[in-house]
Amino acid sequence: MSSKILPMKNFLFGIIQVIINLIADVERSGYENLPKQGGFVIATNHLGFLDVPLALYALNDYDLFLLIAEKWQKNPLWRWLGKYFNFVFVDRYNADLKALREVIRRMESGQTLVIAPEGTRARDEKMAEGKPGVTYMAVKAGFPIVPVAIIGSEDRILVSNLKKFRRTKIKLIGGKSFTLPPIPRDKREEALKQYTDEIMCRVAVMLPEHNRGYYAEHPRLKELLNEV
Image 1 (cartoon, rainbow, N blue to C red):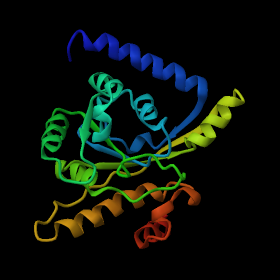
Image 2 (image 1 turned 120 degrees about the vertical axis):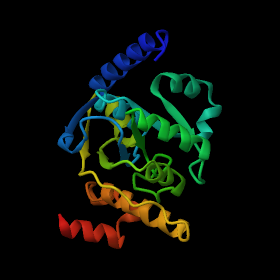
Image 3 (image 1 turned 30 degrees about the horizontal axis):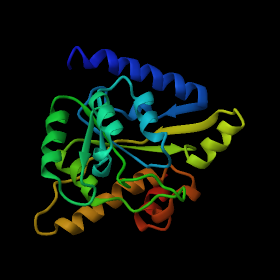
């Protein structure tokens, strides 16, 4: 990393830690499910605007990079932040080959990929259907996937507590890692849909029922709940 970028990155990380400690009481569990080194994928739900800083806050021991929706690349602030927080801007809906090559290059170097397959935060506080373009990145890279559930970071709750000068209780729960087989060429779309649902259901099983949204009645989620 450039000697010019590292000091600013450390400074920004410090600001994130101070802000989150001021406004949130973060409870973390499931660290034993994380590989000791990089080269794996973290897949999470996306409840509010605090989720990206939470990932950086909770996983500061890992060299992270994040997939960010391509629409934010037009925003000068997000482009600037991307230099320090390793953003990779990606097409959420289609196979983005340029971004895929960058993802694989980073993961082979030991970095940890963080994805939110929903592609955007859940404004109704419920899981939305995952985007196959994001899943494609995770599966094509061929590394283990660790599902992580974020509970309590809804924008409504956070803003309400800030008005009352009250810290928001947030839980981050890491599930057991799993891998998915290569995407078959003859049934690519079908497989991507199945893999996306698998990732999302493994996150949903750790969420409260009211946050499961699109996946609340999914057969795979019911199987996972029965296993639990």
